Image 1: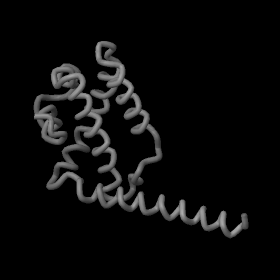
Image 2: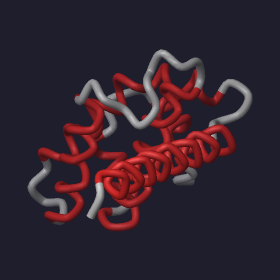
Image 3: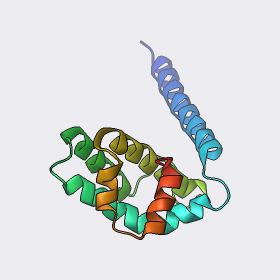
Image 4: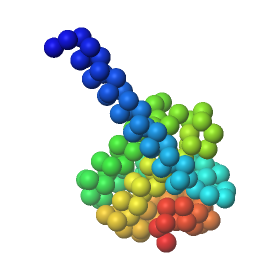
Length: 136
């Protein structure tokens, strides 16, 4: 094999990764919360992180649920994101979308009552969480 074959392969892989990342950014632009919902989601972030930790610590929840929550906590703690946080709107939208997807899965497996029992915030905050994640 020649060196040009390896370079072609490397360029092809990098181009594929770039296209996949661009497709993800387009999906995030389309799915981002509209009309102040992102601001509301950011306001709830401290309560949501405490909720995720409390759910993760609850040994009565199924192991698969706790594993998902542990992976989510790891993702949120890592400084590397799918979309860097310094990009306006999209930087935090990817975190909100990932959290929303995981919380919906937790409700399907563990039930809304488990999420409600561990919610550390106010009633209004829980209502906002339900609206943001489509849990009502």
